[in-house]
Image: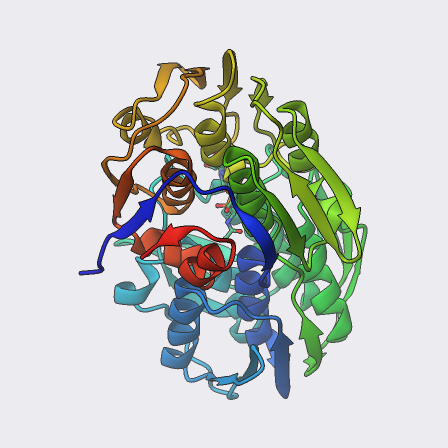
Length: 415
Ligand code: UD1
């Protein structure tokens, strides 16, 4: 069992923090690299649990995955790469489902264990399967596994009922090695989708339109090894920015792509914070008080659901009432009961959380229920009077590289 994370609150964050490579871009690009012949070198790979777990899944499939000193990862795929993801590892990681499109593309068959990951509502895969079937894959469910095989693949039009990130990624990967043209309509537009397209194109793929809702993929025969740097993590950046605002601090967030952060910057500014570009980073200065704001989570470029919990933590001490509506996942308010133990006043009404600001939070023993809930409780702990002890801290390490060291570097009292 992991030690709980202890945070002594009440210290404004000050200094600089370096943002790591994006978890969600890195995971899908690692999955896509099983389609590549020769050596792939990924740079800016974060040292987080989810990356370790996916690396171990790839190793079980026979792939050589080696960490190099400088935060890069070398990936070499054997000709007879395995086609079944192991249950004991796949249950730890939702993103293991991204191997479905990638393995199907290279091996023409795959058996994927229905994935685990954060429990934030039912996370079906119907859109993934609809897309892969449209290209000619035969898919069936078998005792907790998805079995897919593909004798005759052919590019096709795929319309997604909802712009699912994972479905868009799985279809893009399969379509890359499928003859003919595939068009994904109502595709997800997240920066991580664009990063996947850039990686595939750098390896010899032909994808246009990533970042818009219509992605066109011209199938190619093979992908070749390349060197590619993963984009910075917009959610990690947003989390430190929210923490700086929450503590009335003043920090420089380095290594970010500001355009990816516009939805988050806009909402933090509405709370009264000052945010300016400074060199390759963003200067974030907390206001004298935190103003309430209303937020609706939406697919990109809407406000990211992965920042929803952190915003509830910040707004729990705002001067007034905020309404936060969750439109992407159905069960993503599980941290609310925990933050209430610290004195927050939050009422849940269906898909909305009504947050009535209180003058201050108090340290308490709380439990993280998922990755972003853990991050939100850490923000609450940084603001609170007294010490907060966060159980299930491993959730936080799944997605935040060196979180304790980075927070200490900003003057927080964390152990
Ligand atoms: C990815 C991110 C996650 C982020 C989410 C939304 C990774 C590894 N994870 O998750 O951090 O919170 O995007 O930005 O990149 N849905 C269906 N059917 C499907 C697929 C999805 O109904 O076949 C629904 C889901 O239940 C959910 C919504 O669509 O309600 C969004 O899911 P999706 O965009 O697919 O998220 P993930 O790819 O799982």
